[in-house]
Image (cartoon, rainbow, N blue to C red; front, side):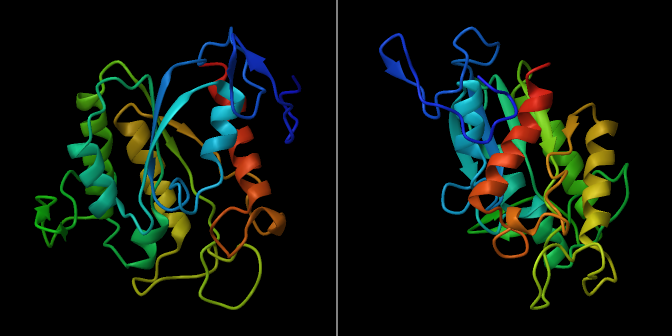
Length: 239
């Protein structure tokens, strides 16, 4: 198949149809267990990249994306409470909602998340905690919960904007803390590397120069989901 094609063909392998059909049954990820964690960009409700990536790889996916998820909230809760032991691959993305909700940013080396409670669940954080502390807790918890899995942090498109414009505006848009979404992405990437987590800058090309990849300033269009999946696959295939 053509690795760089955004329109993979269909095929049937061993009497089982692999969705999207571009998956190589001899590939290193074929049939492996993938747990996808994140926000609406990952979720079944609004995400558009999970199915295309499963199509290219043959991964068997469990989608744990939560619309509106934050590092301090649903994402941290998911990594602490979900059964991740059987995962061969875990991807996690977050940041845009923390930026939009004005979470304290903090810095690499923070270990305590900003205090959050969800339906009786507490993240055991502090009012003096931070987004960076939540990143640390997410990555180190994933390592403990799934010691044999490949864990990858995926960057998000910096496309959130409150302005009625098209494309990607977040590099210029600040929240109430005078911080840009890119500030959160950088701290998350740096914390991932600090804790030994792989980073794939999957949001490359999903920006103001390619507005066709975004449907509403931040969420991928179908084409954007295909491109995001392709960006991941170009690196994942060599792991």
